[in-house]
Length: 175
Image (tube, rainbow, N blue to C red; front, side, top):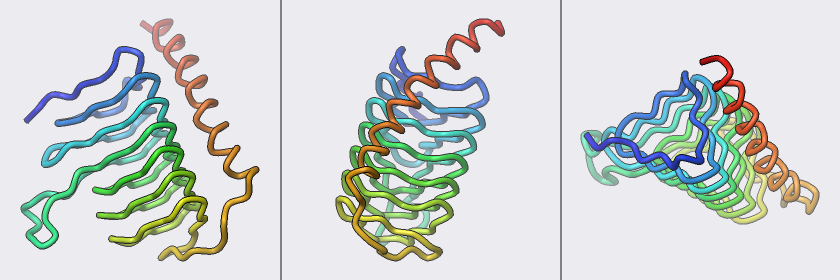
């Protein structure tokens, strides 16, 4: 198994588990009790992305059979993945937003500035287009995002970069 590559300016909480072929870029954060497990495929987390508490990121194994086979988990830059989400073998492009307790399944693609509401289940192979809001279990498109909601996505990412820096300082004081 390949060891993770974590940029020195990323924040990884002590209780987070980062396992396997993982790349985490600068200023990104993986908060408390998260699991990022790239045991069968790679997981890539871009710059300034936040993975909030109790979230799981995983990949699809070829052992599950083909088609469609294995799939990595790709998370772009400036992405927010809210608390207790499950992100499985999918692609979240830059500035996408997964609400609390979202479940986003294999081969889903979230385009830039797309949003999945809290508690939503996005079943395999869905494409959530730029500026779309999807909610429910299973999800369905409900409307286009407002300009204010798009700005919220940007504020969320910036806020969590700040929270990560506070937590880095706290973690150093504990030692």
